[in-house]
Image (cartoon, rainbow, N blue to C red; front, side, top):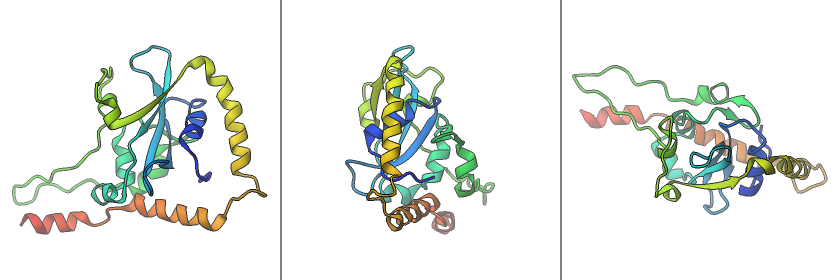
Amino acid sequence: AILGFVNKQQAQDMLLSKTNGTFLLRFSDSEIGGITIAWAAENPNKLGERLVWNLLPYTTKDFSIRSLADRISDLNHLLFLYPDKPKDEVFAKYYTPPLSKAVDGYVKPQIKQVVPEFTSPTPEPCGGASAFMDQTAASSTSQSNNYGVYASITENMLDPEGDFDLDDTMDVARHVEELLRRPMEPHAQWSSQQS
């Protein structure tokens, strides 16, 4: 479901009341046309503290290399699309099919997205974490207050008397679907270039 435009603070408020691994896609506040993924997870450096992590925004150039759906598939720590849909149930139809077997003795490489802090069962602190993502800390004691903020946000987003524009929302939905499907036929180009 498309809720409308969600800023960084609203995303944090929405995600902290959900299970770890719940994520959402939103347009970036800082990168025009950029799409970012925000998700809830435990703070690897402080037991009991939860964070909302935000990947640096993807641009059209990023999606020409690897589709949004495949990037979501690569990130095993992303489990549920907000509010609680299993990610494969939503995005599997957009995943690029697995590459075929080796041809003429060549093995085709695959590009995969990795978030260093989430690649091992026990993530270690990384000095360059901010180069990859932004994180917003929230203590587990403040989670009850966040739900109230989320409730008021939802009322504003779905207010029939508000500035909500269905045509604009549908344009956004079509744009996101287009990004999910990119790139469609790079394998054919890749095969012809390797010969």
